[in-house]
Length: 412
Image (tube, rainbow, N blue to C red):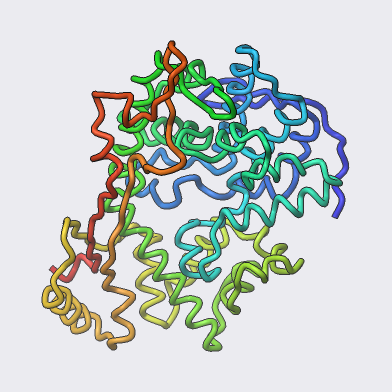
């Protein structure tokens, strides 16, 4: 499919940053492409609005915001004498603009229930390759940067690292729309302190406190927003709902669904399948509206599991969730399961959709090759763990794991 370059430069009015300029006609034509427009119909935070009612912003908002921050970062690095060609700047902007284009509706639930473990990063690469073909190879530099294959490593890290434009935008944007002030970061200060030493992206020492705040904000946002216990309950209910719908469909049950949703409910798909024109075309039609529209009808389906979960999500009758630092005892889980089976007259097989026992983990800062480096006036460089006395990086770099148990509130 070809897509002609016919548009002029435009400006978007963003509630977080103000006016965002589109730097080239190519970028605007990519934004106008149906693949990218689909992101308007996918919420950035999935079911988080069930806890924070304002969290209704989309992947479209976030992608534009991340592109804006890339523009600012490149301008800052150029002002400090670092050479970034026009093609490199365009490639970096496109790479960050398209970094989330492979997300499906309720992305993580979808990855675990419908598309058989294919990650959104893998699908983003599929979409980018198809767009590169449509735009006659003009995304080749962006693809190299996205895949971390471009010779200038600092460009790759601005798209994907522990201090990239993706994280800077989602923390700022998600805290804005949820109203969670703990996630607010000083993105202006962080961008102003960006520099390059050799081929490494570094933060000048004057910005060290902003880096500390960034790491702390990320930790707080994960437990207060992204892994909030009620959000977890809703997301795992969605996973179970989609698994049940797929189980029924694969068993021959005719379920109400849009053509795109029905396509994935009725077949197993792996990453290799997405290189087939029909599969990627159907996925490009899939968004939040397909899933929510189906749930509204499934509320009245004769299958009691599908109906129960659909009613719970549509009407916000979410499961009770217990969270603790140790795994739940087998006897305790078995007791809850038996009570649930008795109350709802469930078989053992049906009960797995009502009782969810799992764990979740979070790194505030992940040690390894991809570390945040601090540049001091004498030219020396230290990673943030060595450079700061205020943060206990050894503690923040340990994964925090919490165990949870979800079940219908009526059980207790």
